[in-house]
Image (cartoon, rainbow, N blue to C red):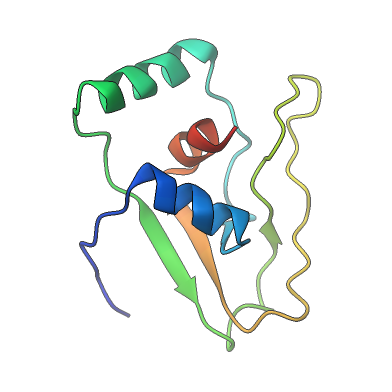
Length: 109
């Protein structure tokens, strides 16, 4: 297990999501942030305030098929808050989001 304090720009984070590098472990809750929380996140980013850290799990090939993962929400619809199960059949690794899913999803959608 390793620990990294590397920082990422919002742009690079979005690029990595577009490249299907980030997934949600089945233990994660649904996206639940109301619009006020999303507005506060963007306000903090625009004011250059800290917005917290992300806890990411680099899932190697030994474990990638042992756990269920879900794709990040790409198009928000209040009537469909469920994430789609990820098909990682041909993947040897992925990055699981353990903490920060609400922020990452808010930025992405």
